[in-house]
Length: 243
Image (cartoon, rainbow, N blue to C red; front, side, top):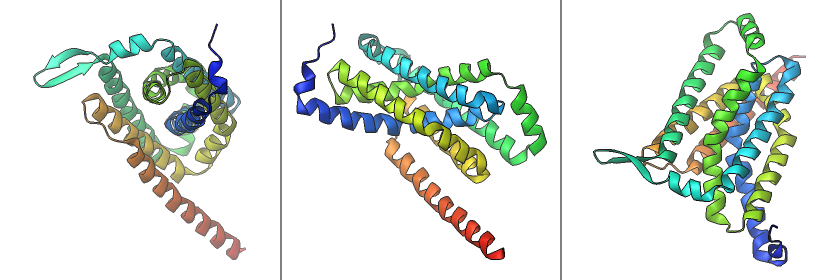
């Protein structure tokens, strides 16, 4: 049975609250990636893809939490190239980062160069299984950061699992609104894709042993989103004045 003595420990509740917030922040890239992929599906399948994607993320994170010993082994070097040592975790981050760079570049090309009608046809041809497969692959990569953060902040498994579950519930509540907002505003969609490119660069750098704090990336994207929000507001005011 799972130990429940932590319930009477105030420090455990502080850790739970802090960890839940961090899990939500670390899950932003996951929500954006799922929103971008779900946009390629027919409208009646998008909600299902978003929910399944986030549920897969939750299952992956909880599964990794129960495999902490395996996670520790993943951080042991398995490839040595001159002065560069790569562990299993590094290889996973490298592959995930390169995939995000490819995917982000491909999607930006579709947005900037593709024909609007053409895009809708492509969207119909993408299958739910293909989208879910891509989501599951990236869930593993995104979950590594999340689980390593959880293990570093709390030493009670129940607290870590509960934080993951609560964060996914919050993301499920807001994922539809985020996806709709991204879909309705092409410039926001490009910003979201640029965010994925930044995350891809950070993952590649991390895999090569050069850690880039995600706070810098979130600040840059937050500032860009703030500026774009002002632009949207100004355009809305101008449109209302013309009426």
